[in-house]
Image (tube, rainbow, N blue to C red; front, side):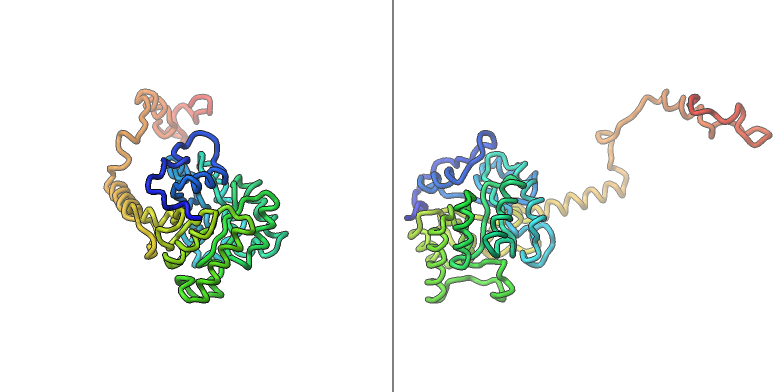
Length: 317
Ligand code: KIV
């Protein structure tokens, strides 16, 4: 079933930062109502606050954290502890938005590890759901988590944690075999109980066909407009990264804004105009004069080489 064809979507249920936190039931309702779902990644408290205020209903603490924030070359290096640290900050700022924690590489290689990692996201960090990469190969893990009461978002198509196995970032599912496999992956993850599925770097016709055949929302990234919703890496959206992928559209130029601000600040420090009177605190000049006037340094030095009147005791100062 496709719920993305409604041309008159209602305002997002995430439109206010106040009120109860959204749940996967709210996401299912948005989907059923034909409301397109806008998800963004977030990695820190102030950004989460702003995105929640903008009414973004779902925030993903993606393991893209690795490249976007931590300077790693891939997501493979990201650890559970790093994910938990950043998820805690996002949860504190997220207002009503549902927070999805991205299970990092090797944190769900078996049911026991998966339950332990997902449990940390929900119990320790305060997320409401987790995301797991992989289709058929991850279906058993998804089922285990869902049976334990943990909402799971699937992720198929390009799965960046497999970059060392697949060789390079490229569109998935273009061949007959690839398209069939991707459809099978989507159905397997849906049957395992996931509440939604990310489709990453999938041709738009295939993504739309998968979306039509599912009864849970698809969230696309580089998968065309036929998905039930979209997700973008927030640093791409804001123009903060040093590389913008083809599927991303920068809605701002924060890199340029930050560069200009840092240069202006450095110039004002250099020429002495920062800090100015507005950023500066003054004290009563008489008080200062009194203190400086009684300073040992201001007294004439006597014959014995010590200040006239002796060395002041602490209580004299
Ligand atoms: O880590 C991430 O940001 C993601 C999105 C690309 C879906 O997995």
